[in-house]
Image (cartoon, rainbow, N blue to C red; front, side, top):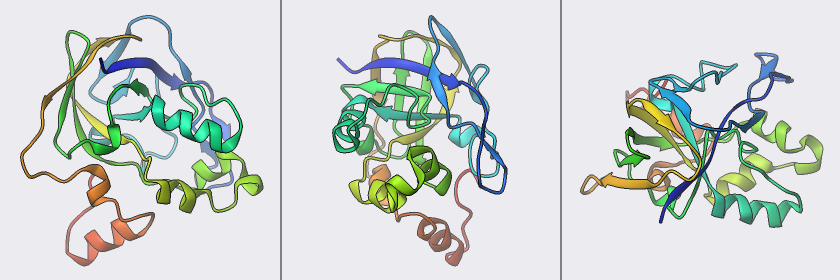
Length: 199
């Protein structure tokens, strides 16, 4: 049964060498039932709101199966929140999710898959800086990205809540089908006169 392993929110803002100067990627598990609003997990924040957050990126989900793969590759424990995710899931292939696919989490909350995560240099610095050179490319090439989610119905969720796929739009691409790698995805959309979702 697909389930929610953990709900995560920002632990603290950390200094970062990027343009914003701080990052909210440091997320930790929130105990108990957690409120999910239109903009995501209650009390969570995004430091760089140009590229993160908003209605189309209200939540970020990452699979326990993918986290286990990276834990083995990197030789370290990667607890829920380590990828900057709000939802750590289990038993659902989040990378095979279709754009427009809908999930119900627990009894009430409903979300919709919008797009894949595009890894950035902030993520690379969080992973380990010089110790993990080429992390953005490596993460991209493994295609274990996880999806961003829009919140359709607000409510509360908690660890061990069941995740049910309620709708899979026929003919829609998966998040991996539309992923073109860092920078290239946004550039391709702009060449075609489109705006990237969430931009």
